[in-house]
Amino acid sequence: MIEPHAPAPPGCPPPRSAPGDSIGPARLPVRPGTGRFLVLAGVFVCAACGLVYELELVALASYLMGDSVTQASVVLSVMVFAMGIGSLGAKRLRPLAAAGFGAVEAALALVGGCSAMALYAVFAWTGDWGGMWANGPRCLLVAFSLATGLLIGAEVPLLMELIQRIRRQDAGGAVADLSAADYVGALVGGLAFPFLLLPFLGQLTGALLTGAVNAVVGGALVLGLFRRDLTRRARWLLLLGNALVLTILATAAVLVDDFERAARQAVYGGDVRVALRTGVQEVVLTGGTHGRPLALFLDGRLRVSERDELRYHEALVHPAMNGPHARVLILGGGDGLAAREVLRHPGVERVDVVELDAEVVRLARTDPALSALNEHAFGDPRVHVRTEDAFGRLRGATPAAYDVVVSDLPDPRITASTKLYSQEFYGLARRVLAPGGRLVVHTGPVASGPRVHWTVEATLRAAGLRTAPYGTGGRRTASDAGPDRAPADRSRAPRDWRFVLAARTDPRLGLDPDGPRPGVLTEASLAAGERAARGTRIAGLSASTLVHPRY
Image: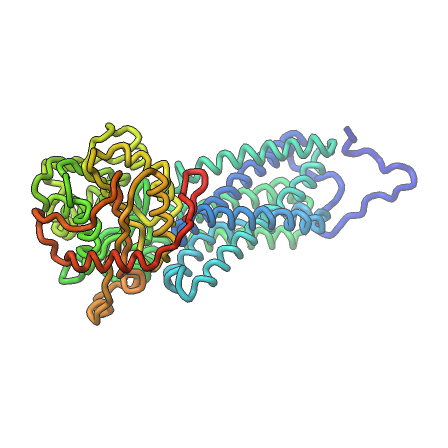
C-alpha cells in the first residue's frame, strides 16, 4: 500500500493542484478512517437512489405504454450504455472530483426526482401514447434514461478519486470496496421501491423523495467532508445549487396531489368519481351519474364503457352458453358484467369468478352505478368470487369441473396477461372442461390487428382444442363523440372485438335456443361476425408459450 504522504519519486514533479480541488491528499475535518466510512456510506445511499430512478422509469413506462418487457429493455439498455459514457466523461472531472461529484449529485437528484412527474405530464396533456404524439413521449423516456445513466455513470470515477485521496490503496481493493457499497445500496433501493415507496407514497411522491435524499446526501458529503478542497466560490455554488434542487422537489411534492388531479382530468375527463391505486393496478371510474355514461379504466386502459359493454359481453358469453352450462368459470370479469350475462341463462347452478384485484370486485359490489350496471350479480348466491391468479386457479381446479369457461382477461399484448394466453394456460383450461364443455376467449379489439387474434386461435389448437373464431362490431354514432364523452373514452374506446370459441370437438357457433334473447346479439350478426373473422385469417402462425410469447 502506498503511504498517502509519500514524497514523489526522484525526477518526478510534484502533482499539480487545480483551482477549487486538489489532486493530492484530501484535507478532511475527520480521521481518514471515518472519512472513508462516510464516503462508502454515501456510495450506498446514492446507489439506492440510482436504482429507484431506474425502476421508476420502468414502472411508469410500463403503466403508460404497456408491454413491460419492451419498456424495461429500452430503459435499462439505454441507461447502462449511458453509464459507460458517463464514466468516460467523468475522467476529465477527476482534478475537480469533489466539486464535480457535488454537481453530478445535484443534477441527478433533479433529473431523477422529476422524471416521473414529467413523463406523466406528457402522457396526460399530449394524449394517448399510441396516437400522433407517440414518438414524443418515447423520446422523452429515452432522454431521461440517457441523462440518468450519464449522471450515475459519472459517480464511480469521481468517488474512486475521492476515496483514494483519503487513503491511497491498490486499485483492486478500492474497486472492491466501492462495488460492495454500490451493490448493497442497489439491493436496498430495489427492495424499497416495490415494498415501501410505491405502495405508501406512489410513483410521483416516491421519486421526489428519492431525489431529495440524493441531494441531501450528495451535498452533505461534499460540503461537509471535502469542504477544505473547495474554493469559497465552489462551496457557495454547490450550496445554492442543492438548495434550488431541494426547493424545486419540495414544491413539486406539495403540489403533487393537485398535479395528479389535473392530469387525471386531462386523461379521463372531468367526471372522475373513483381513483385508487390497489396492490395490482390503478382503478378509475368515470361517469355513472347525471346521465353521463359509466367507464372503468384499469391502468389507464378502458375496460368497460357503458355505451357499448352490452355488445361486448353478449358476444363473449352467449355463444359459449349454447350447450350444458350448469357450472361456469369466469376468468377475470371482476366488474360483474360477464357474470350478469351468465346468470340470465336458466339452468345455471354455480358461477366461479376468479379476479386478481379484490378492489375491482368491491367496486362492482358497492359502487351504485357499476353494481346497477351488472344487476348486482355478485349478490346472487350462485356466484362465488375468488381473488387469485387465473393461472394458479386453473392449476388447482378439479378436472372436468366446468361446463363453460369464460376468459374475460386483458389484451394479450399486455405483458402481464401474456401467460394467460399461452399454450400451457389453455392446456389447463382444457383439463377443467367437462365433456361437451366450451371455452371462449376474448382476443382483443380488431384495432390490435389480425395477427394477435389468429395467434390466440393457433395457440388454442396447439393445446388440443377445436376452434370457431368470430367477432362483433359497431360504428360510432354522433352521440358517441358528443361532449359528454370523456376525452380518453372518445380516443380509445374499441368498437369491434374478436373472440374464439373452443372445445374438444368442433364447437357449433350459435345461441342457446332455450336461453334468453340477447339485447344486441342475434344469430345473423353472429354469423356475420364469424365470416368477417375468417376473412382475416393468417395461416402458419406458431403457438404462444410461456417461454416463447408471440403477442
